[in-house]
Length: 219
Image (tube, rainbow, N blue to C red):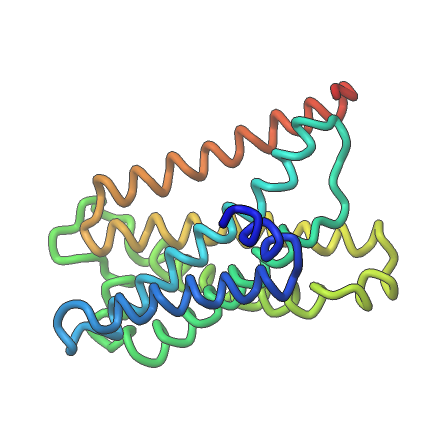
């Protein structure tokens, strides 16, 4: 029941186990639902949105707590675990998109723009920047994974460790930028694009309010 779920969520092995079941179930559902020939494309899309959702949860948890306590959050294990899974999903997406989905014709769409280009002149440097942003996010995720342990926290010290962890904010902004360009290329300029923008703005607003609460010392 609810008590069992609460006990699972209160322990790191339990949280990782639940996340593994959740992600595994989603992957299985996406892989075996629909045309087999498009399974890898669906898997790539799933890992991209999983990365975004988990990153939003990880970046939103600390500000949410700070907003209600008036105190900054240094090291929240739930936030760290969500961040680990966000990084794993993002790196999986990077590998799949590079090795499987990004065929030459598709890759060129990032450079030349889609056939019915909704933003004439946007291709070229914006498309290239979107590709570069994806790989930069991958490098940031690798660094954050290397830091997501107590040994790194003790070795670096809390202030320096926290400064390095703020690279997650850069990863978020680059992920959003990459995602927006991707939605335009794929022609998903309505619900998907709107959802991406709205959730991103909500996270920015939450973080801004949390900083105000901490500065004011509101409890």
